[in-house]
Length: 154
Image 1 (cartoon, rainbow, N blue to C red):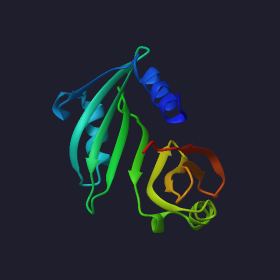
Image 2: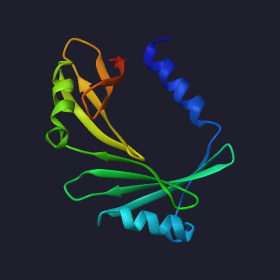
Image 3: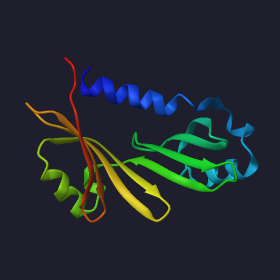
Image 4: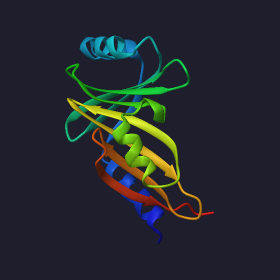
């Protein structure tokens, strides 16, 4: 079994205990609905998914922003904004993040800004010719927090 297969099985194992279902925004509790609407940045709310895991409920709103970018809002059942993930251009990342990613070689294929409370990090998919691609998490000061290889099977 290769590394990619192991990662896929691990991800399924983590997701399996969760019960997830799509719901209408109108069917969300009022505090959740307000948080989603307040933080949608005038984007189009594509879908809301409700996930129940270990007795906790989280709502994930998928929002299409102008310019073809996506924003995901993670909202607690009480209406607290727990986390956001947002597609961004590399040029929009702090210089320290851009420098760290350039130092890894390859081309940044996808970059997400992740905000959890007051903590911001950047998740980059880096394509490298002749080498395994990378999935990298970088802090705002350019420190690599996590780096894993992604070996595609072709």
